[in-house]
Each structure stands twice: as structure tokens, then as C-alpha cells.
Length: 174
Image (spheres, one colour):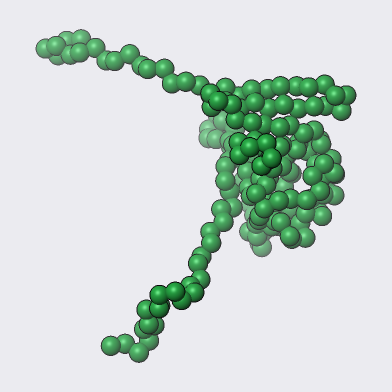
């Protein structure tokens, strides 16, 4: 046959697997007159954990990183989207460098001790919110300010209302 072919791997032999880590998990867009404009990006902290970026981000967002000095592998960063109107400079395609230049709005961290459906959100001003999934599919957010006042916000999942069926067509007349 061919001399350049590689043999089929033996059962039990170690194989390398390609691990794909998404760069962008979610993008919130602002509805503009002509087209939607990206406003915020949600990216995994694993893109920058262990790099030199965290200290630089800590200098730019001292309130945020005072409350949350380290990032976990399951944390999410909410950052302002890149300005798409300005052309990218050469060499700026590196994810770490582009994240370093963007404003961190919040860090979302899972709270396994509170259950699988709970998370802590640390905002750029240092305020902290706890979110939890409610039984009806809605989310509740509880925040305590520096004076000890408790604020509660809820995101309520809309229920889909059945639409009225189209009237039957009889002899091409409705």
C-alpha cells in the first residue's frame, strides 16, 4: 500500500485530544438604527487565568479585584465589547492582549456551596450580588450595599402564551 500511511492506533493506546475552548460565550448587543452594535461580551476566565493579564486588570479595576483577587477556572468575565469602528492594529488579534485593553464590567463565579444554580456577581464598583435560579425558571438577584441595605431584583421568565389559531378557510373566504 502506501509507505506514508500511519498505522491504526492500538486499543488502549493514548491519543491526544483537541480541546476547544470558546473565546466568546455570549454577546449582548445594543439595537441601533442600522444594525445591532455589540455592547458586552461574556468570556471564560480560563482565557487569561495564570497569565500576566490579571495583575494589569487588577490595576485598572481595583474595586473589582479587591473583592475577587483571584479568578477560578469556571469564572466568567463580562467585558465591554471591542470598538468595531476602529481598525485593528497589527498584532492585536491575540485574545489576551485584546482582553487586557477592554473594561471588565463584572466577574461571575459559581457558588457550589449554595447549589448548582447559584452564582456570585462582583461588579466593577466592588458591589456584590448573589443570583439563584427560582423554581419557576426566573432568577433572583440579592445585593447588599456598603450600608447594609439589601436590594432584590428578579428576572422573570416570560411564559409563552398560545396564539389564536388561524380561522378555517372555507371556499377561499375567511
